[in-house]
Image (cartoon, rainbow, N blue to C red; front, side, top):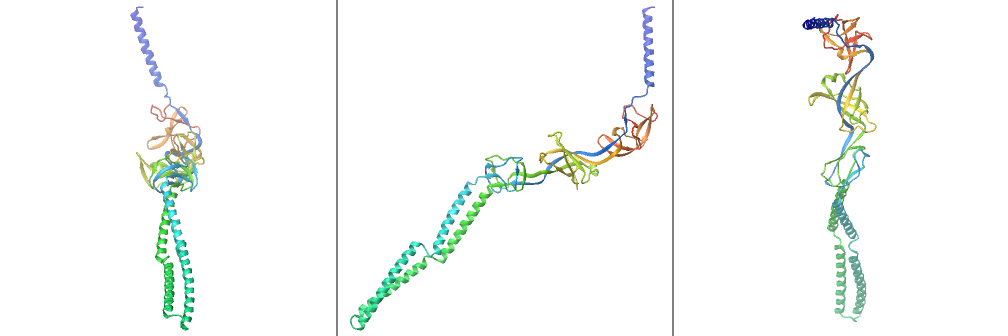
Length: 398
């Protein structure tokens, strides 16, 4: 046989084989993946994100301006209400207090002098002079009495008697002047002025003491310091925040639930919190407050759901961005199928089931669903359900 004839024969055989393969392939039923209807507990959840905040918190603030001279605490430290956190420079206030106390001591000494009638040296001098004048007056008075008797007997002159009377009058005038001097040592105005100076000094001392007290910044509540960034030498103005303190054994998590899912969320529902920074850890709690309005959160419209979360180790920190899952509903012993198996055909919700080796359409009612599976009614446990495929499916297909 000639070579050309062989080649022609081989070509014909190849075309026949190809045609037979195509016919055989077209007559084969399509390959369709199936899943079984199973009975299980299905939990409907609302997965989202949120942010941690303490339930009870307060900010310690500087009451006066000054430089930080001493730092007494650190971040994450547990403190009691009234514990000292930071000390500010109080040198000027200490100096003012010492000056005010010195003035108070001096003024009180002056008031003591005034209450006793004057300085002791002045009083002693007046008393000594008064005693001397009294003795001299008594002696002169006796001398005058004796001279008066002599005058009655014509033994003394009228001039002598007149002279001694002048001496007595002079002594009396000196004693009166001495009494006036004693009275002038303490005037009412002196005491009033001293008491006014004392009040001023006491006010200055109280102000200095208050400034010294404000130099120590204390914890406003008991709790854990979760925000603290001060360094020694930093300058604070009155009102500046020093530390944020809160109770962290329980925390609030503000969970951002998308508007379509809000109808599934109710107070008291269980919540599970996870944090990417601590993989494997979970924190449990419940929904505490549902939102009263819808707010924008980036491109999302959300409701802010407040969840109360137990945090026994205080390791879920305020300000942390976390993952949240709200368990909205749970059904035990439910028939479930993969969500992707559910179809919409002719305004009906249903699935394609395998009856023998052909497909049949079964209408189903949907119940609780989660991210991957859905509860259904209208099927039996163990039924085979067609999953999505590239080839269109129809009733009766083999």
